[in-house]
Amino acid sequence: MARIFVGVGSSINRQENIREGMLLLKDNFGELKHSSVFESESVGFKGGLFYNLVVELNSELSITLVIQTLKKIEVQLGRPEKSIKFAPRTLDLDLLLYDQEIEHTLDLPRAEIIKNAFVLQPLAELAPTLIHPILGVSYQNLWSEYPVGKQKLWKVVLPIFN
Image (cartoon, rainbow, N blue to C red; front, side, top):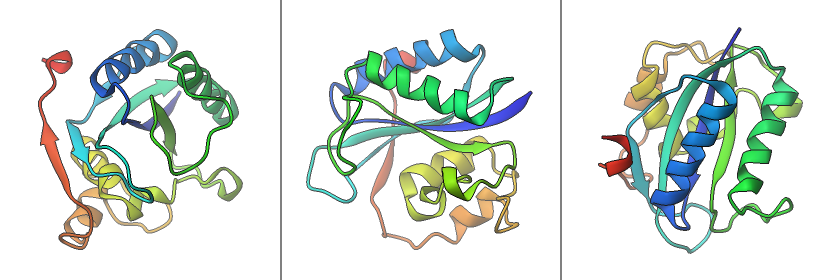
């Protein structure tokens, strides 16, 4: 059984798409753990605010099948199968970690973990002592070393998580 972390984000109908995405993740993978929800400005393009969080799940599926399942959920919630990288999203599900696997062709661990506050802070909250498989440093330590003010991010309370 693989321990998997998925980044979840939305900038279109955010609350509803996050709620629906979480239900579909639970339907496909079973019990989930999740970080707090964070709101952030868009990165890489001028656009609306995003909601982001990280989800932990366990699965017997291969990396490829996990990615296919995540893409299927995105499409179910209205994301075009072929969409541009820096654009508003109904739902964005990114495989961040699959156990401690290192797969450069699949971007595992996902490079965005150490680049974007909206990925690193929720991951550090959810799995503070977990060690990055390449850097050999905990996510809590990576977050504590993240440049202050590089990206704006703030916690939000959503009724769907109460």
